[in-house]
Length: 302
Image 1: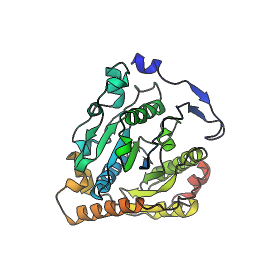
Image 2: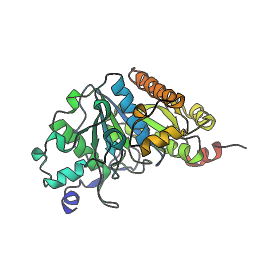
Image 3: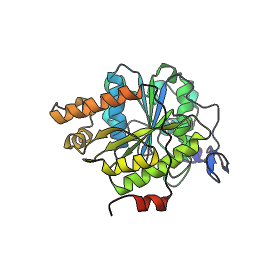
Image 4: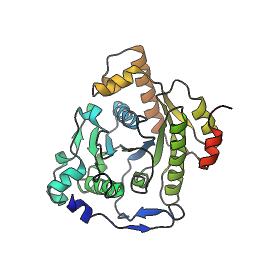
């Protein structure tokens, strides 16, 4: 993938997104720049961010909103329950035209999914090379060139795993609110704490703020709630560990397409409630992260 690597921006030290942070210089003019509400969904790897994002997109569409979901993971599997397939990534299609974006048509990289949700998979560089921030920047740039963001009410960035670098934290530069998906266990909450730190770092220079915590795959929320109370976070939704949710992924379907049952209807109702609440311009959360050693001592039982 020589073309991609040759065109990667150089990394350089910046002071502002956190003392000593190393970030990628992105074009400051490449912003969403519309009235759309923009959400970035983060959480520990494997916690169910794509399931959450896709069903939230479906819920927004059920409320009559024009929705665009952008998967930000080299696996490009964020939107398959909406589209029923693994769609080509932005990086794939750009490479196919030698990165001459003017040669692309909208249908080359935007795919309509369930209930009209528009789906894009940003993709990523090969493992161990390149930068995720570049990929996100190129995706937003391409969407703007095709005027797709002007016709959108809701944009959801579904971002891979834990935040470990400035590149994959770059969707925070475009978002209004960051949502964190977590389970009621040590590793998920530990990762959530690191994500809060990343959001607060980006909030120094951008408009993103913490929007809330989504409890997922958890019967109880006691440890999540303890941590939220201690750090200024707030749980905005709770999805238990239900077999219907697992089956929906195997059936490549959103929960709004699953056979009706009491538990499926309850989850659908919770997603619709969450979507409606996120449409309200609520005050951002003034969350604060703990030091790693402090959260290690804080979590769990005596």
